[in-house]
Length: 305
Image (tube, rainbow, N blue to C red; front, side, top):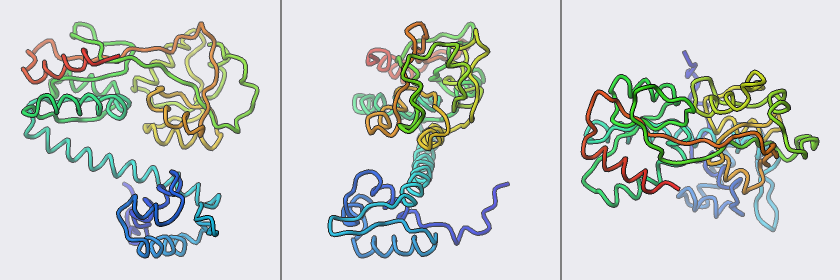
């Protein structure tokens, strides 16, 4: 059981949001305050209280503005995970509410739920305002179990292998990237073969996730991935990789912003190493899809790239 006995000493959520805003490009406390909906005096007081409570120097102030110290950057990385988790809490509770009253129950793997499904749902709900969609988020193995037990209408997975006898449809494509911190040793300038990648300790998702299955399948000839660390969270994996611990294996969808910001750099891989994969919808062969589920499926299959 998690220890929550000293929650009264935990940092305030909005103070963490201010740190994340400053790390994300806000050039002043005023800009960070605007991003989180606070007045600047309240934001300044909140950050001062955070520095006092944590006993860590977080900010460096100058006539040019406010920037994070090295310690502040590290705390901001951790704070981003808290913000992500709180966002997931809000999104999850909303999805549960929708699922209770909704007509289409969807269970999606983490990468699909985070990076692909929001775009589909935005256009779908605009075109079909009368159809409610409830969402549950699991790893791919758990999604298949939910579909098998008929607890959802559609399952969306990244798995390489799919259960026999279940109807499926391709809803998208992506590929895995191997990425590392810019400070990671430069010996990886040559493309990595499957054999050399299998010998390299990697930060990976847990067994049961589609991403883990895909990399283990790609490296199966050499025993699968060598594990430097295993996490259930994409965000935790990216933070660990940014510290230079080891390269990370994730979907290019999950790594897009980190690569664009150059927080992580993709490592070259050999042309013979197939890291492409299809993303699938599947449903139970024991039940007919509802009109709403069929409409959502048709929307995703027609909209996919």
